[in-house]
Amino acid sequence: MTVVDLAQPVHPGVPTSPNHPGYRHSLLRRHGDAVRVDGTSGANDLLVMGTHTATHLDALAHISHDGLLHGGVPAARAQTGGRFLDHGVHTVDPIVTTGYLLDVPAVLGVERLEPGHAVTVAELSQALGDRRPAPGAGLLVRTGWGQLWDAPAAFLDHDGGVPGPDEEAVAWLASHRPCVVGSDTTAFEHIPAGAGHARLPGHRILLVENGIPILEMLNLEQLSGATTEAFTLVAAPLRLVGATGSPLRPIALLH
Image 1: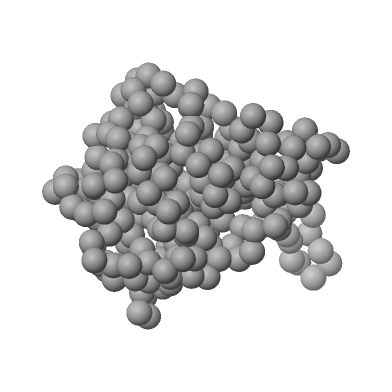
Image 2: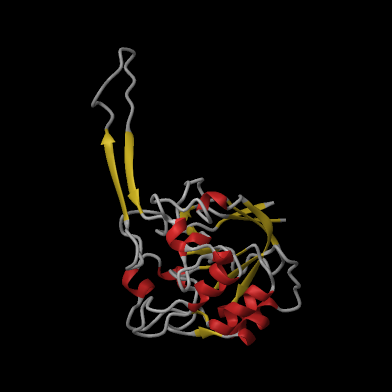
């Protein structure tokens, strides 16, 4: 069995969506600040980050449409008290399922997709090939954008846009009834040039209309080319009661 890490490294310089806080790390207690009688010393840290920073899962509470969350839950009622007891990330069970990589650059014969490339149903269908995911599978869409993780301005690329499934393609993914979808970009779906995150129809389709959580900012580079078969996808968000998302470290198990 081969274990493939699907998480990006986290440090203060990571690309961060303009809608979310970034990452801060402080060493609060250093070795030598206090030394025990036996000569040992301890160090500890403080981490400050948004729940949608770096590799993370979007819970159903993350997006509402016309004031409603998934299943018709009023968002105003659900967020009363400052925590989403309905559809918070604590309601997402650990994910252990059959995963499928839809490697769009591979089928198009490119290293990575161009900025603002709208991934179509035809491209996703070609990437899936003759594999037939059962309901409850995990569908991961590779754009090659993970190659830009250490170049935050290029990764976010407001002016050029970010590749991802267009609205029709997101609906096609949802029609397969996966338990989760994911990609290697900041917002999963297609971001047109200059548009930023002003409109996210894919999030509405997945989170509000179909109740499907989203994995974002995955590292799919090692997984690409490692297998064209199904694998076991493991992803466990933190049990952050009432939060709209959670950092996580997903893995793929290749058999």
